[in-house]
Every structure is written in C-alpha cells, then in structure tokens.
Amino acid sequence: MPSSDPSSNIDKSNDKSNGPVRSFGRRRGKKLRPGRERLVDELLPAITFDVERSLAEQFAATPTDIWLEIGFGGGEHLARQALAHPDIGFIGAEPFINGVAKLVSTINDEGIKNIRIQPDDVRFIFPSIPDGALGRVFILFPDPWPKARHIKRRLITDETMDALARMMRIGAELVVASDHREYISWALLQINNHPDFSWMAENAADWRTPPPGWVTTRYEEKALIRGVKSTYLVFQR
Ligand SMILES: C[S@@+](CC[C@H](N)C(=O)[O-])C[C@H]1O[C@@H](n2cnc3c(N)ncnc32)[C@H](O)[C@@H]1O
Image (cartoon, rainbow, N blue to C red; front, top):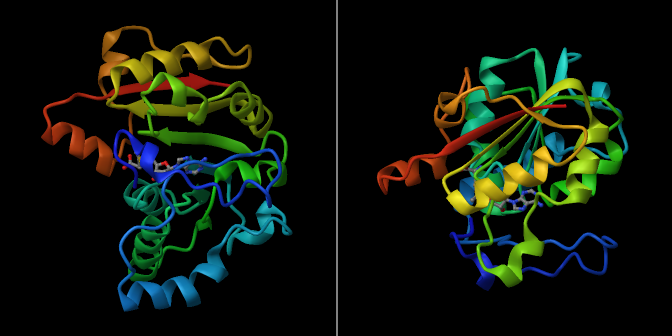
C-alpha cells in the first residue's frame, strides 16, 4: 500500500483501457509467496465481482443488503465485517494485489462466503451497481495525497460523490475515517457540500470515537502506534 505520500507509485496502466477514469496508487509490492499466488490464481476468479451478473446472483445466499468497502488494504476490516454480518453481501475494491492476496487468504482460511472482490479501481464497477443498491459504504484511511499538485488524485471527488449518491439508497450510511487532519477536514467539506449527504455528528465525541460495530483497520493501528488519533465521519444519504 502506498505510504502517506504515494507520488512515486503512480500507475497509469488503466489510462487507455478504461476510458476517462485515471487510477493512481501502487498495484504490486513484494513478490507474492507461493501459497498466496496460488490462491490468487485459483480462488480469486471465483470471488471476483462480476460486472456481467446481478448482485443477487453473485452471492451464495441472497443478501439482505449490500455494503461496499473502497480501498480495503489487506482486508482486515472487510473480513471481520463479513464474518460479523453473514446475511450482508460485501463488495471490496482494492487495486494493490498484495492486499487482495491477503484478503483472499483470509477468506480461504475463515471460509468467508459473502465477499466479492474488485481487484482494481472501484470506479470501474460503479456503472454495474444499480441505483439505491448499497446500504453502507466504507472509505477508511484513503490515501491523502497531501501535495497541492496531487489533490486531483484524491478519491473523494464530485464525480465519486455523485456516483455514491446514485448507488446508495436513502438513509444509507457513508463512513469515512482518516488519521490525516488536513485531509479529513477537506473530505468533510467535500461530502457535506454535496446535496445528497448529511453529516450525522451532534457533538465532538461523534467524530473522535469510532461508530458502533467498528473494526480497527491496519492504517488506524499504524497511526495509533505513532500516537496519532483518527477522525471518524458518518454521513447519511
Ligand atoms: C492508506 S490505504 C488504507 C487501507 C485500509 N483501508 C486501512 O485502513 O488499513 C488506502 C488504500 O486505498 C486504495 N485505493 C486508492 N484508490 C483506490 C480506488 N480508486 N479504488 C479502490 N481502492 C483504492 C489503495 O490501493 C490503498 O490500499
């Protein structure tokens, strides 16, 4: 996964094949160990989000709701949520193959049935998600791209918010967390200015403490080790 300044990891491999969406961020790190490489070859194709099939068809049991996690990293949060909510269908997107391989390994070890993976930029699957299909979306510790000239690389753009507004049903929750102060203030303005989202906080405790049912993420843990507290924003569609 990229560090706080991932500018050295730009990947433009999608520029031509995927139209106007331009992806940034690291796709590959250390060589995968043989066990994980085998799982990526054999199990990942069976649990990859399939743009050709309906959401209901993609999960073994018909899910009561669909939740999306964007940028799941190593999938620690996504796996724990999927285990805690076996009736929900989860879609997780992450272009970094080493993180995808880690999640596939957890899915295999723990027998998780209710996750479908988009092993690439989440924006490529937006057109395949029907209007109002999503009940919850997590964007946890997104890359802050702190340099002014890189702000346009941030995930939270007007286009992303318009797409989320379309895919999320009325009353659905968007959870955004970050340990990067400037970034989270900026994200709050972007999202709160969107006509379809309302910030649910009533007092400081609401953004200083994680929402109920929280699962700590790897980047959140890293921040805690550095003595940095994170901010948790919950919006309603
Ligand atoms: C800083 S990491 C955080 C990982 C994890 N959420 C955590 O808290 O430990 C941000 C992740 O978002 C992923 N990411 C960035 N842009 C993305 C996009 N357009 N679609 C899906 N994932 C994306 C990156 O590859 C990276 O792994």
